[in-house]
Length: 135
Image (tube, rainbow, N blue to C red; front, side):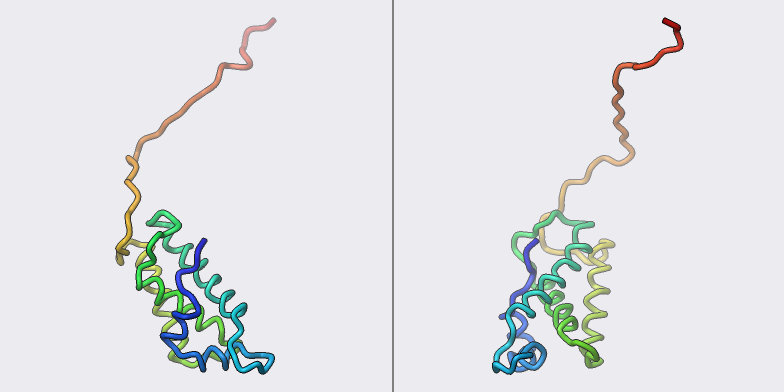
């Protein structure tokens, strides 16, 4: 699994100050890369769970849509307790879009695996081990 977004994507969307406020637990004045990385990895795992229903993983070139969804999910995860309403709403919208991707209502601009014929059943058997004949 690869992450769909990086810390630089979060900074570009929400600003470094917010990341520092959410992750600087030791007072160093900078954001904690390990905490941010963990949130992005967790968000990417959630995305994989939805996307894998329709697409082959890993996805090579990450669509901008998935990078944005990853940022919204990771941002929500970085709030320890009470996330602001806008952050919750963006997380809820991200999950709704992932459900749409999973259901095929929202299509990503990535290759789709070839469909397999439905209704085809293949069965194989091995040689009979027991029989009714007495020995």
